[in-house]
Image (tube, rainbow, N blue to C red):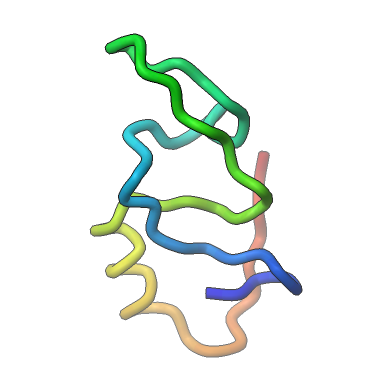
Length: 65
């Protein structure tokens, strides 16, 4: 879901950790590394599906850091 030109809310099946610090490269508890975001907001797949089914076109999006 587009929220700003070139930036989206979308599923991130390739990520294992979400939340604070997920936007920058970070190390997981099992010592693997994950890349950060390039501006999009990654969401676990089930949450993205639920949000996509619920939100209406044109709904405002407020990103809180």
